[in-house]
Image 1 (tube, one colour):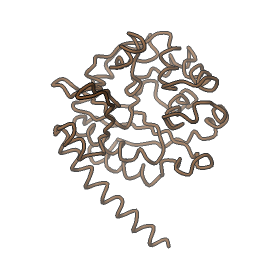
Image 2 (cartoon, one colour):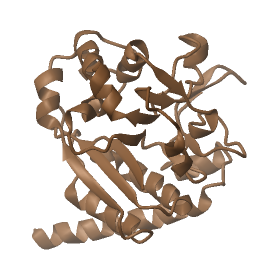
Image 3 (cartoon, one colour):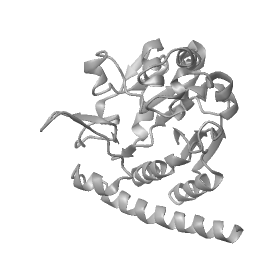
Image 4 (cartoon, one colour):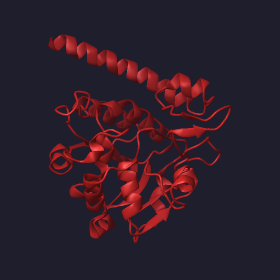
Length: 282
């Protein structure tokens, strides 16, 4: 089985849809997916939690590949507010949902090993071999950050793909320490920087498991993270998988055309179905 962790609000639905479509294209083992969410609408009206309807749709989709697959929705609102309401990282370039994964250690129903994925990741091959990585003595395994290893520290890791050892994380208190750090200190990349600063023992995964630049022949997971372009002038590029036209025209990337075409069809049908249900209720 493949244990996966996603975190966010209702806006991650499109990203989860693409991520899971790409994973099920290559991985036929059952997926045990855990989705952490929060209702923070009292802070910002746009901070709505993932809905049961969204999760049900995604679960039905992955069950078509393997009947034993499931998605479990877990609300961590209360735990988050108890610790993070006054955090200086509540208002950064990132939403508070970037901190959600730091509460995974408080949940007893998560498996001891699971793969955390940002929702702007797309699988280009079977991800199951990641789970063969020995992390018994490590809190997590991750790939070096493409920019961070140059501008921050040589061993700075990107937190968009994390193979987590939850037993070791609880033993060392890593996530609890990271939450405390984020609660007290404003940080440029809040939880990612905290994890890099506080981790006791980390393992490095090959770049192919979190390719933050151009797709390569051996890429297993491509991460559509913000990148720097130096020519013809300095600028940043931040195109996400669900921006399908830009993926194809700006990146000139067509390796995921089948996945993205299915995404467009599915998301259109889902929105039409949701609109129909709303009209009936009215």
